[in-house]
Image 1: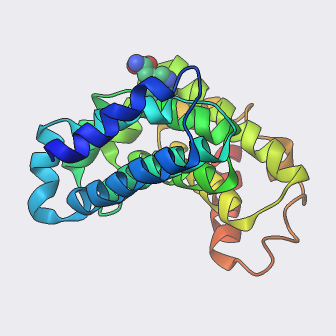
Image 2: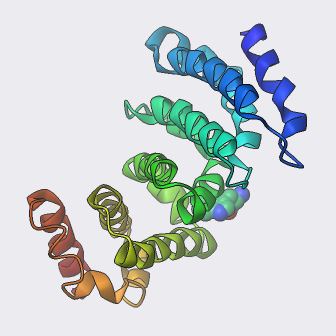
Length: 223
Ligand code: TRP
């Protein structure tokens, strides 16, 4: 672990101004791939969290350079967090809620590569699915507002650049937010028009589950 952390810390000076080269990015991403194994394994996950190691990846998530080396670094870092949340362990969500992971994911959902957006929204969705996570996000209007604004922006992006995979996550996030009574009321005026008309009916034609999620969402919002 010391060696892996060393690999990570060595890269920090290359983040700002952005001077990370492809070989340096590949090298740290290899270290991150090993960390992902530690994050995934049930015997090492808890010590990994207790040592707060995910925090070492946040500077990587906080970059905004569009260079490939940075996109790859963000995607691989998200992969480590994605591996943590995959198994719906409340302990993991509890940990993440003590950190600033949500604003970092929101920023990536707004403006990173499609693949990074998918992993970032997967993480947010996993947080929302957890009862404590939903309560946390709906606890203040500002938090709710930040999440719902980014979901809305993603819908706008999906209108011009549709992908079922991202759309599926966005709809599921909205539907889960609607489980919170306050959020449900606030969503009445905030659900994008494109979800209410037939903008996406063509790309959802094959996806019965997502179509039914969307129908459920619209009916909840109308009540
Ligand atoms: N510390 C911020 C807060 O507690 C974290 C945050 C920013 C956040 N934007 C968010 C949390 C959106 C949830 C949703 O509000």
